Length: 86
Image 1 (tube, rainbow, N blue to C red):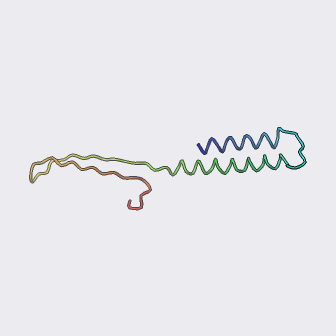
Image 2 (cartoon, rainbow, N blue to C red; image 1 turned 60 degrees about the vertical axis):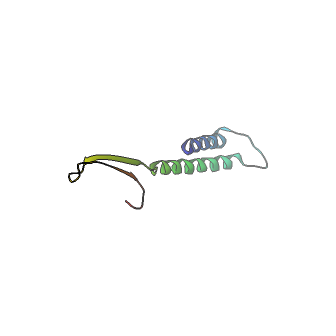
């Protein structure tokens, strides 16, 4: 969602900065457009960074027969990337 929001802010800022030729005394629309373009670029980059750091989970299930007792032993292990214990 943040990637889409960043693109939307960038496009709105570009429209304000380059396509709208309205002079308003109390606000500079070009400056607001540039600010929105900068904010959109920052949000887009943060969205990419957060997407790259997304956690991934791995689950392994192993079944073996205990040679001493002859019983079936099932072992489940789960790991998550980014855990400090790994």
